Amino acid sequence: MADTSDSLITASKLQIHYWFSDKSHTMDALVHNKCERELLELIKAIATACSTDIKLETEPSAKGGLKSWITLVARSEKKTSLAKITLVTLLANAVLATPMHTSVSRLAELLADNLFADKEITEQQKEQLRLVISHLKSEAEGKIPVLDQSNLIKKRRSNFYDALSKYKKIKSISVVITDSSRKPITEEQMMTREGFKSFILKSDQLEPLVFENVPIEIISPVLAKGKYKWKGIYNGAPISFSMKSDEFLSQVQSGKVEFKSGTTINCTLEIEKKINSEGLEKITSYNIIRVGSYSEIGKPADIPEGKPQKQKPVAPRKQLDLFGN
Figure 1: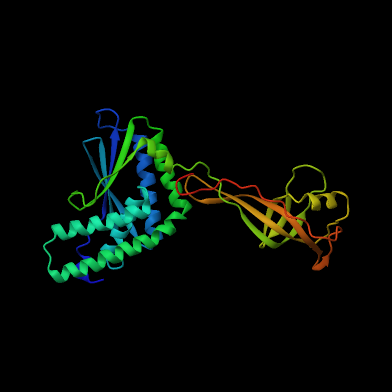
Figure 2 (figure 1 turned 180 degrees about the horizontal axis):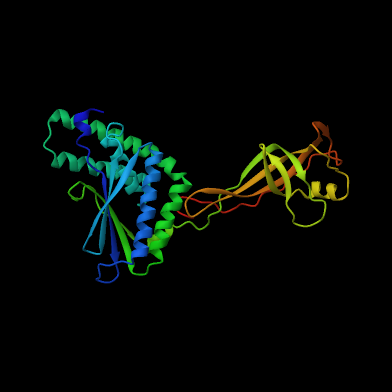
């Protein structure tokens, strides 16, 4: 990108406007701080997805409901172009709106219209600017699928709207990109209280991961009946797991399968995960769905049944999705 056109890209400020059901201009400080924190973490996650190193600055609020401004600044101007900052700003605005695919294209178009109208630039600079905006639009649209799949981003946004939904005084919020003088560059996008729930995740449970033909060395089998955890070594690390293969459990409890030092099972492994309040994934359980075979110190041993076991269907689980549906 040419320096002359890049220097014209100045969209780096997000205005967040909280609208109240009464005529006041105050907001509970704890609620406001929680919302602002989730917004900052959300923007940081988007910047990371865009491989852009930024710092965030805040400005004093203004009257009229409650307005606050978050400014995105490059940590190193030599390494991060203004166009990159604009990209993150556009995406941050889009993530807080719906639908993202429509809004990010519209935001880029509004940004271009504003820059062409307000800047005293040459025809050559205008042509360069058109190329910059076109590149920004294309790059932003290319990032949408990545953001769609980010549990961290979805969780941070969910936390933001969940906090707002619990504060009865809030009737809506709006987001707009402004220039350095706080003049709006894009249209103000309004989200009403009724729409908050579409962004709130209904479950923190993620879709389980299922792996076939996984070797697990048995440390401690469970020989008694009951919902006790087995212990084994998976990928070089000790784990506790539930044995959910009724066929294999029956053979173990009847004495048809014996365990010695070095006994390893080859199995179908299910890993259940959830996402915490910070947007980080955490493994909640390991489950053995079926056992195909087992071996003693590297020597294969047939399962006494002598035939493959049918894998039981795994019940569908709730997972995080973009709008919590």
